[in-house]
Length: 621
Image (cartoon, rainbow, N blue to C red; front, side, top):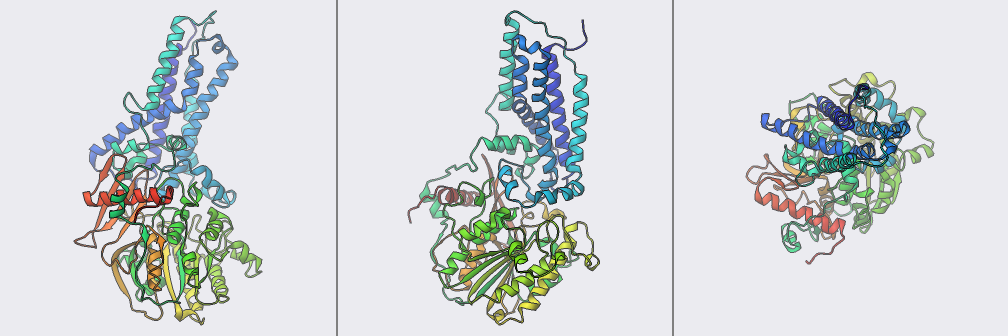
């Protein structure tokens, strides 16, 4: 008898090898992201292990179903060598499809805190110069491809050791082969379902651990496959529309009408600027990387700012439309992009404002130019426009993303000088983004730190200082309200910035040259709050808008932030008794964390999002 296993033992060993390979990838994912995941004792880690067994089984069943079908077919064709080579491709390729996204997200997860989903296919097409970024990714995040490659090589070596005993040809399918095919396919269906109970889905992971740790249970390949088969948003109804409206009304009819109409607005959105890097938010706790912004904060209204997402495309949308992203796909890149998507520039235009959006990168990145036109900006100025004016030098280009912040912010001032007042100018910086470049000749001006972003943030802070130096010379300066915030937080370093209440902390700073008296508020101000807050500053509170935020000027104590995490909705809110403390409310599938009142409010916000943003549904007033 020739050495090897019969077909059933052979397939069992192949599936076990695939499962062990997947578990190695899971361990590698955790090993390179230990600062992010924090389990509460042995009980939760046991749950994570059990969840891996179930999701691992579902992943193997899903990705190797075709291979099992081909190998178990009770026909003579499976005895042919060529046929089995083709079948083997359906074993090797799926393993690659499992390892590649898990490896990629080993590096990417630290920026998004989400598993990859089907939106990755559309996102890659709008995220800029991926070709020029590839060498930086390959060197800076070597483990994202070296480790999966090593695991894959081990998989191939062990796979070559599993031998199949020659299959004898039969004139027709016999009973045992037919029964083996039926039983094998039945067990495959059980694996795909994740066991004999109800079929699992991405939200099933929350049964085994805290929502923030579900990425250790699920995996990227399975999540991508699952989201391809489901809508971008589960539009569940938690209550009647009238009850949801009573708890939260996204239609803002009125606010303050005694503001200073006609003041200019300059909104500076700093790439990846988190509170963790700023001395004004960490009194004595860190070596600040923002000395200029810290000095400006002493003369500004400083709030506890929060982003509504971990991607630029989510943050810029939330700031300008008042609508957060509460689903896997970015709202402006989804099928719902045209639904009720109005914006701050359109509101200000009704009061005579001219508006411009400044972004130093390539036009078309993340469809910002298209979105800006849709929500009412009069002009979009990016790298193309900067270079078309023939200003600057070749050294102004960072080689990857766009124009360095310092020259582009100087360009912004010069361009604003051509605007008639009143105007709204929004500038979104680019330099403090991976691969964190510093202009040639300035590398020694800024200190190295625990992470490359720190040196880059310090450069951008100085670029903003120079922006203000130039702006102070302009006739429009004293008639302008300056707002500084971030598109999302950067790379979290300390423990307090690696949790529900820390991942999304950004600055929100309002500076008025006419009233340079500083104030510090514990009020949580999220990005969606900026739209109504700006309208109230200007006294346009009667402007009718659809907005999922609230004005910081009319909510002095009770602030809240909402975001969509790794398959869960989370609300962080000021505690009613002590605003410096924060309440965490989470909904993921059937799992709910928080007080009954906060859970009901969060459900109402989600349902109103489904009604007004997704379904464009008019609600009774």
